[in-house]
Length: 131
Image (cartoon, helix red, strand yellow):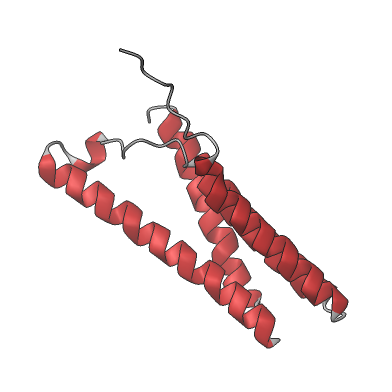
């Protein structure tokens, strides 16, 4: 009996790549409208979001930490917290894109996106050390 190697490698890069492509397209479109600053800000936010998605693409499941206890309730709580964070980050990224396309104020959303990126990075570094 012959088993073929699983070929999923390319599919894991589709969403991060598409997110970065949208950021590049948005930046070019806004640069052509003489709104280079807004285009670079949108590219930075979407590039950061693409990096976040790329970092998590190999994550098979959520780890359970001692902070949430143990067992089914702990896994449910951790998963709910992670999904809530993912949805809120997606909404902030979407708000940056919409406000940029509208020509509206993006600064409050940029601060939120930056804060989300910093908090995620720091928490991933701390959790990676087993603290």
